[in-house]
Length: 588
Image (tube, rainbow, N blue to C red):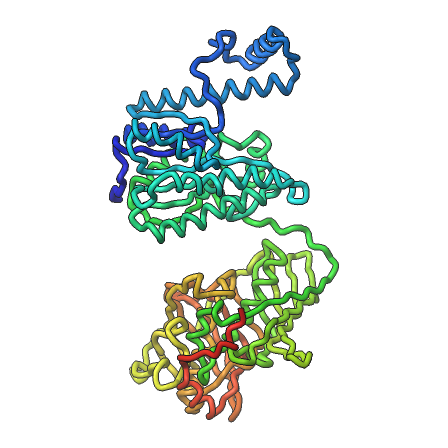
């Protein structure tokens, strides 16, 4: 692993929240590694000397007794709240002093500035003389943060402002105090809460997600500056109270030791990693625990607006000059919603799936699409079955039905059987079959995962497949969840190739009796599809299809997959690009 750090003893690092807690431990570790300079920012006031009455006293009960005595001597009433406030202030000062002393002992330099970091003009004014002494700021660590944990219905505007301002407005203020283009690095202390959420921390999750997105923007705008937002899991220190420790213990989540976390930050800034602008640092992921099922069978109606601009992948799925929603995407649409209704459950199967009227991104694209879900079965063994219909409404109020199916989600995916009749025996005659040329298939690069036809007979076809990973922005409104519609689409492609080879006709998906997934078909990984034809006529072909790996371990299998054939499709398949899209097609 190569070092790519620009940090050295001349580096001047601006650190918010750097005098105390976990951020202080990180600055100490950097000082030990590079003997650099720090400007530590915090809210706590730092007295030049500690009061005589508290010196050399470290036992909590005795220290609080001395605080009480001092308040009485000053003619003040020593209430528990006042005693605790003085006690907390005294501990904060001691911790800041210890941080500065430890940095200096490591060979670094540190100056502490007590300031509200959200006050941009005050921060710039106070930093100016320090920069004159230490030198130009070369890096930023934004570790400041506040908590105001309450359920959202109990939060006040002040609660939100307290949490939000330290993170978001604090960062804005820090950035306005430096020349960003001249910085070597920017490190933002985010939280795993921005990714997973946490009860009572809606404002904290939002504020940290702003840090994550800002890091991505800054990294893109300033490529020579290393920018990273670290979504820390819970540390063994800082804002993690004993109550929170128990909460994380119940989740089987180990706390990050201070020494380990600090070293991880140093390593992130020292070595050549993938330079991702956002990373998560946790002992283990949080897995949603399924709640006990309510036996009541419920119904849902969900609305969605589809746009061409919001779904770039459909530009590679064009028939007759018009982008068309792939059938597998409609299954993913329904399956994803079912999973979201029941966290901890996973898509297992889709049965009696029918394409009633496909969705075309032309002037027929509806303003809204409706998904009606009806629970038809709930089992104590952990199975839920939904009846689903996707439809839209015409301008005259007439419903148009697009897809119907039944979806089953389960707590535990069963083990799959092995596909035993798989053969890699290459038929030399199939080497010249080029499925994406001459209109055999209309699919463009995003969907072109059919790499080689291994063999093809009137009864069977075997294909080698590999599909490059599709970036999230191109997946649009159909982000990959449990079911991968982009790789699953290749099962239908195989049957379309078989129809074209033996019938010289184009064909399109019509229905599926049953689709069962045991594990998602991955991107960037070789897999195979075996198709078995069991019935055919002039207008329709029926087949079973299985996606599996080289050892025959099944990803997904479809029984009674039906396509409809038509000579008219031969011409439409050749028109597989749309150079012009009418403005009316894109609904904003």
